[in-house]
Amino acid sequence: GMLTQAGHELTDVAGSAECLIVNTCAFIDRAREESVNTILELARVKEAGRARALIVTGCLTQRYGGEILTEIPEVNAILGTSELQRIVELVNQAEGRQDWVTSAPPGYLYDARTPRLLTGRVPYAYVKIAEGCDMGCTFCAIPQFRGAHRSRPLQDVVAEVEGLARQGIQEAILVSQDTLAYGREIPGNGDIGDLILALSDTRMPWIRPMYLHPAHVNDRLVDKWRRARVVPYLDMPVQHGDDEVLRAMRRAVTARRMKDVVAQFRAAIPDLAIRTTVLVGFPGETEAAFDNLLGFVEDVGFDRLGVFTYSVEEGTPAAGMPGQITPEVMAERAQQVQELQDRLAWPRQKALFGTRQTVLVDGPSADSAFPFEGRTAGQAPEIDGVVYLRDPHLSPGRFADVRIVEVDGYELVGE
Image (tube, rainbow, N blue to C red; front, top):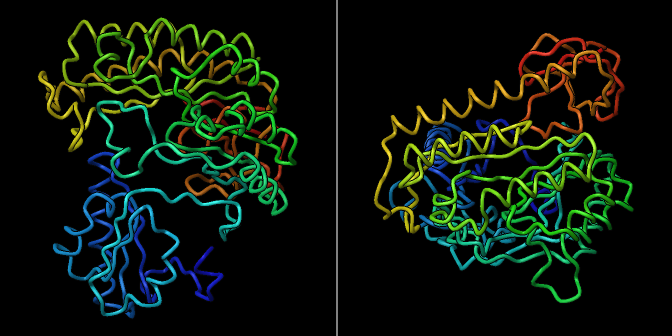
């Protein structure tokens, strides 16, 4: 948004751009590798095309900015996570330079006045309600490059969501590194429960909070969730189901407490879909601990589950812990968890056959022969599967009432 406001025209065709910008991720090894490969690919595009500058931004530059400039000379400038507001300045001045190392301590957080460009391709938008994290999980490096937790004022978030609704957005997805910690450091602001109650009074049809840490849940929060107009969907990363591993991870919650939290939400919210993520192969994860994780997953019965293998993160306590697990064992355990989850979820998925569902039509289907695809309230974008839609006369960005006529794993077909 800042670049278009300054008169620059955006293009998704790299070969036609005069300035190339890469926004990177440094969360896990795979993300870092993908970020570096993208930088190298665009460096080749720059050398072969009309681009005069290559700028790299995001978490990777916050951690390794100087190294990027040293190792990839085609990069003209880097921009850390705390200085995104300088992007226009860099685009205007980066050509021919290689001395823009900007990696101040993380502190930047956009607000409702920050220019934002909507592509119009999808009817949902991500709304960052806070930045940074104070939890200190031993496997996570996010605080190193995202900084301490800091929230946006409640009314500022409400103003952004209202503005998005006026532009035709149908779903606001609330994100941060620790969503349930929202607002706690701002006197008189209210917490995440107060925020979703305030957003319930906006014209935004669907409100979907993500990344809910189970350690922050209490009875008052569950009651606010019950009263708020949010989609019946809970994204709560549990990470593990063994108490010793949870303590080593510094998750500040037990397996028993997480089971109780899930039961509380299920009792309060009808037809609730629950998504989680688990991490296998954490240092010291014994066979007994892994068996406890499998038992936990079976006892809770999640609707969606993503499984990750542990990745050594530089500078984290877990990186130096004894009992590191081999990649082969991690891969085998990840497969076991996913197979268990698929088996447990199938009866719930199969029960959707023949039901009527309200679906948000995201747009034309990119990977099937169906004319459109969309999602139910129990499906978040990009991670939970879709509903393929047979009717060619539907309108993207609108809601449709459909009957589920096919179920294929986590994918549905509606007409």
